[in-house]
Length: 463
Ligand SMILES: [Zn+2]
Image 1 (cartoon, rainbow, N blue to C red):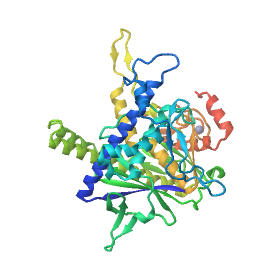
Image 2 (cartoon, rainbow, N blue to C red):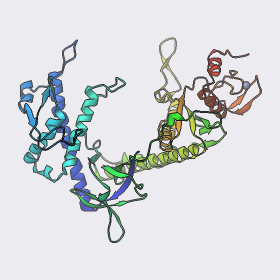
Image 3 (tube, helix red, strand yellow):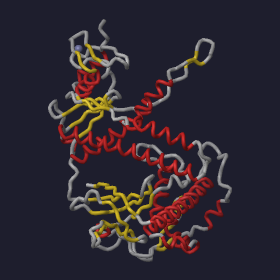
Image 4 (tube, rainbow, N blue to C red):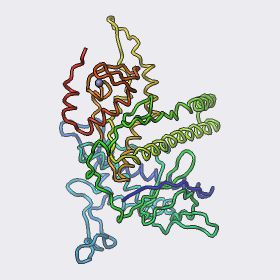
């Protein structure tokens, strides 16, 4: 099982300076290495059916000039064959250009020693941290150039400004780097930086090994995330659990109540953003009184960032608490499949017969959108899935088509506007809260009563 634990770091003023310097050096290295790759890509690739209108101004020969044809392996490879001998040995040569493609990751990793020669400030960086920068560039670049298993690619990787480059990674850290000093304080030994105290608010689970550590700068402080691994803890095969009426629960997500379960449990919407709105507005108003770049303005920007971070953490904690609470009682959860893009889209513009724009209800819609964003149902569903995976339980997404407009008991269509909060069935007389009815229906659809789905799709509303 793999986990990630995050702890707050408490660096001294001197250490904070070092951390900031490292981050800035990493950022520059990232941009430089990305530039190398992009320049080559733009100079050598072109779409099949068209010429590029923009391309690298550096001639191709210039780019290839600095890339050696072969690289020589410095030490034996880690991978071993059946007899325990390394697959690749010291002294082996590998081509840097394969089928017209430059092996940028290897070339750039080998080039790091030249960086250290040219720019001696890079000598202070730990080698793993610097290598990880190259690996990050390679990841971003490969996501741009090669499609994943779903055939999707990311956009063109961007050069990172100071606001967007926030972390660096030690790719090999162990439990031995976590120590207690004679006063009983918890410390982490970061190679190249030294002993940094941290708030070990929860212990590393017994048996789990620390694998990597990512140091991250956030609005209020520095944080460290350890990735932990224990191969002896099995990840349970959740597909094995079969849903039945007694071991499953359907949930309906909404804004009047954050969620309603088919068992009739209601959870209120906490509205963290709405509650902090006046504080946020006051800070933002104050900020506008000061010039760009002035000290008070920067201070206020920090305060606003901290408030946003606080809101996001409150929300995340709430989501985790609710997820554990629901999964405590049941083994399988049916949740509606959310199309978040449609949920928070803007209203389409409306025009009258003469082509003039008329009110389209966007201001009301904007309020609704804000509430959706504040509730963050998407984050909740992904947290729910993660908690379920950890506990060896299941979350199944269900097509929510028609689940708010039909009766859970007789499947009769009872049309409701969004403002109608009560479900009254004219056919069988069921009378209950609207979302509760939906939750039961989601559970029924999820349990795959085949005739139910057909009935739902084909049923015409009774007069
Ligand atoms: Zn009914």
